Image (cartoon, rainbow, N blue to C red; front, side):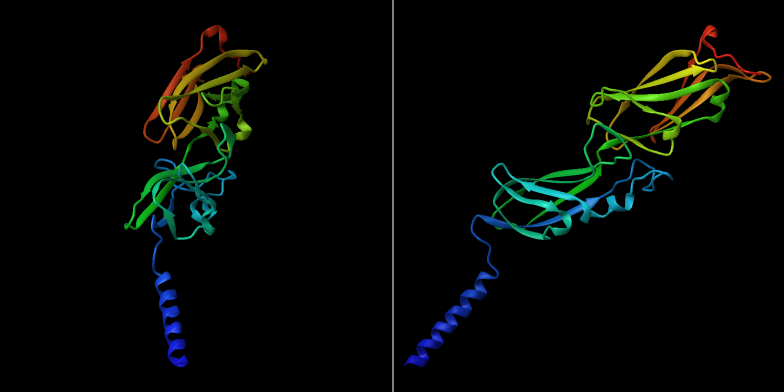
Length: 266
């Protein structure tokens, strides 16, 4: 009689353990988690200009990203993607998933910020897949200056300001190997571009200002060259600022009044 009793207890215990391994608690459901990264800008590929310090390979690896999954009442996960489980059991309800790499600053040199977010619903009896796609959240800017500017100016530089970065940041000749990154609002944001120059005598020439629409994940490649009248020897008439945002190549020529033209040393 005792042997029979022991057998029943053991069988019931094994059956109970087996069922617990495959059940999901009432009021919860399983969620599969995934992060996709693409740190590229527009049609330009993922390589950074020589001399820039941005490590693109680091941004392509989703393991490096920080992840936060939360609802109105709780945080389901907050940590690195490499430590995040591929599947989680989560309480029913609405959630938001955020993933990012870099620092979200208003403006800084070589400071790429890649971000993504997504909302999803956890429903009873349904296995949910939550995926977030991470792309650059800021505007990337590079400026190159034509060397012939040295024949007319002793100093020249472009400065940038935005609605988020109201104090202008200079982009000097020495910064040409770097990229400057700006936070951009998703709609109706503009960048104020100012060109400051001094002639060969050191006298300042009135500032030239342009307004440029900007949006996240845009790459502005700006080239500054002297505008010469096509006569023998060439005569300086103004400055051409070429802004290429990968979708349109736009030249803006600023004509300089004769009394403001720099003196040329023969």
